[in-house]
Image (cartoon, rainbow, N blue to C red; front, side, top):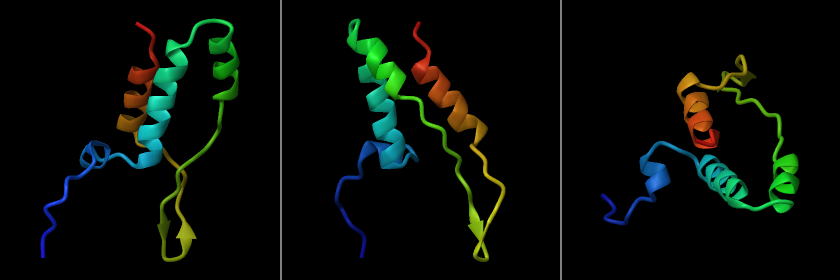
Length: 78
């Protein structure tokens, strides 16, 4: 039985909620005025990797190139 419920736009765009919320948080940080902006930017630095799992073993960690390009375009202050 098919559901007629609305799908969140971030889901229909192929994003996870974490990705969507990170993009939103970055946009809010970029809108702040000093000194709040520099404080928020200093707290945003996080290092992570994404690993696919197959047969109970992690595969090589990677980030898709299109995801990286999309994040750079959102973070680029024009």
